[in-house]
Length: 514
Image 1 (cartoon, rainbow, N blue to C red):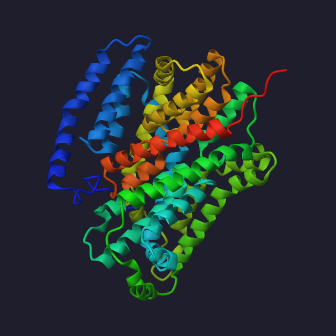
Image 2: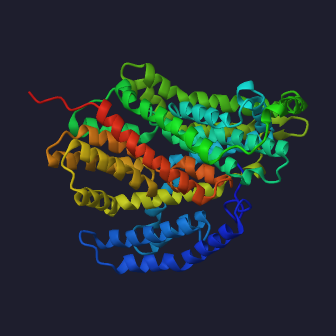
Image 3: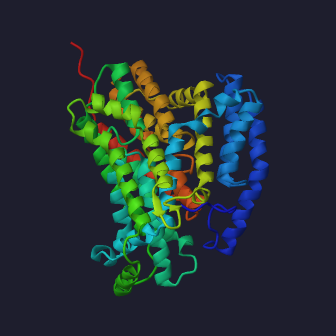
C-alpha cells in the first residue's frame, strides 16, 4: 500500500465549491479544536473525576482535529497521547504502551507483505486474473460483490485487519488497470475507487461477526457472558446469530456502493481481448513472485488454522490445540515471521538481491500505523480513568430502558457509538459488562442485550481510527474522510437495525431458575 502524501486524501474529484468547503473545514479545525479542549477542560461535569474530565477534553479536541483534518491524522494521533502525558494522566511508558500492541505489528507484517506484492508485480498478475473472469467482465459492478464476499468469508477465520491486508493490494492493482483501460489520469480519485476500498474494509469487519473467532470482541463477549451469567455460548450457537447478520450486511454493502458509487460508463466486457493480451505480456512467474506467494499462502494458512481447529473441535475456542497455537503463534507473530522471511529469501542470486529490501519497507504506510496506535492509547486511558464507564452508564440512565427490547436497542447503539472512538476490542470489554449489569438491575434477561452489545462493538465505520480496516482503506489515499463518514453512518444504522432484529428473533434466553 502506498504511503499517503502530505495531502492524505485525493482532492482532484472535488468541485470548486467542495474545495472551498474543504479548506474552510480545515481552517475551522484550527480554532474549534482548542476551543473544545478549553471548554471541556474547565466544565464541571457531575460524576466525572478530574483525570476523566481532562481526558474527555483531550478526546474532544482529538475528534475535532480528526473530523476537520486541520492537521494530518497521524500527527493528531501522536499529539493526543503526548498531551495525556504532559497533563499527568499517565507516564510516558503507560500511555504509549499501545504503540507496542501486537495488532500494531500485525499491521507492519501485513503491510510489508503487501509491499512485496507490489514490488514484484503480483498485483498486476492477480488483477488481470480477476478482470478476465467472464462473470466479472459481464458487469464491472460485480467487482463489489466479488470483493465483499471474498473479504467477508476470509474475515470469518482471520482478523479483519489481516483480511483487509490480503485484499487491498489486489483492489489497488485492479483500479490501476481500469484507469489505464479507461484512459483516466487519476482513476483512484473517483467515487468508484473509494467505493471499492471501503467495501473491502467494511466487509472485513462485517464478516468477522459471523464466527466466535472472527474478531476479538466476539470472544470477549462470550467470555463475559460465561463469567458473569454462567451461560456458555457454543460455536454454532454464536453462528446462528452472527452469520445472518454478516450475510445481510454484506448484501447491504453491495447494494449501497453499487447504487451510490457506480462504475463509470465504461464497457469492460469489450476490453476483454485487450486485457487477455496484457495478461500474456506479464510473462512467466519470477523467483521473487514465487517467494511472495509461498510466504503469503503460508501466513494465510497459519492465520486460518486456529479458526478451523475451533470450528471442527467439540470444545470450540477452549480446545487445547487452539489455545496452544494462539499463545505461541498469534496473528501478529505470524505476520512478522512471514515478513521477515521475505528479507531472507533471495530473488536474484546473481545480483544478490532479496525478495524484500529495507528501502522497500520505508515505503509502507507508517502514518496509518501511528494513527491506529494513537487511537488505542486514548481507548485504554478511557478505561483507566473511568471515562468509558461514565459514558456507558450515563447513556443507560438517560434512556431509562426497562425491557429486553429497550435494552437491546440501547446497548446495540452504545456499542456502535463507543466503537467509533476506540478499538472494537476495548469497546466490547467495557460495554458488554455494563449491559449485563444494567439489565440485571432492571430485572430483565441480560443475555440478549449483552449479545447485541457485543455485535454492536464490531461496527464503527465513521473514522479511520474506528477499526484497523478503516485505517488501511484511508491509508490508500483513495478515500476522502467525508466519504468514509457518509457511507459509514448508513452502515452503522443498517447494522443497528439488523443486529437488534436478529438478536430478538434468534438470540438465546437465560434458562429459568428451578
